[in-house]
Image (tube, rainbow, N blue to C red; front, side, top):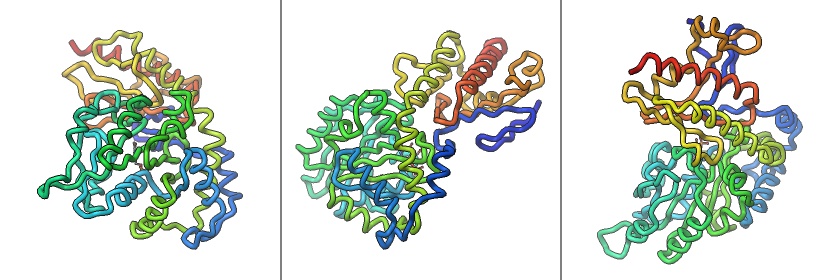
Length: 385
Ligand SMILES: Cc1ncc(COP(=O)(O)O)c(C=O)c1O
């Protein structure tokens, strides 16, 4: 066996790495690095960083809201939204049971904000049942917490980059209003949703009270998220950001990358979607009994490879994709320089492995990955009865 021990995006002399673990491993482009280098900066806690101000101004304008706030991470943006919308002790927020804010943010709502998260079952398309939601608002009886917030994720990560329908969002917002509840959108990848729907981000968030998007995922920036909403909401979030340790100083270096991403990367997200679809199509065409993809319902840059065989797990497959054996070199599962192909995907305790596309992945790498993935699937088909 050749080597499998590579860091994100690395290459060794004998192995070519194609890293699909997440769009968070995306790297800043040359323009972005130049923008970072040349950024005008100041102390943002003093409100003196012109580049941060510009990113916030531009974000608010793009999303059709009054104000915006630059924060270090998507996790902090979601937590701030929870803290501002659920300002009274004993509040409850409802989120999908597959929402990032519920699964992967360490229960910050409870741990830090003192807010109880209540989950509603996510459908495979990232939505949840609105009839059920109607029955879930509480706070009329002294025994109950008061439901102050509903959270929706768009695109939906664990549902495979799904874009929730605009009509569903409109209906959801109406229900929240009827129940005097705020609506927050975790739009970590909302620009992918806008690309898929062919509408502006402002249209998507028209009816929500707040939204955040991440610069550090498919937009290839080193760090940063932006939280957006009304002027009052952002004023309070700004105050609380300091308490969470999110007040940063000459952070215009990061905001400069963000501004660059809005101009350079956002218009190209459709290419990531096409490349994702190319891999999905290749796997779908195999009609494999080991792995399948839901080509029809593929929306954006996240592709779930569903594992059909009970004899292998998500981590078995991800390990095998990343390994390079001598027999592969003999079978020319290589790049043009004869290097074996290590495909990195993500796997947890899931019934699928996940491929995430981003701007640094080239057409050549997509073709190399397809070659390797097909080889491994055929290998499993031959060895697993
Ligand atoms: C949908 C979604 N929301 C929020 C986050 C959190 O972002 P961060 O890693 O910047 O805290 C992620 C991260 O992967 C995500 O996928």
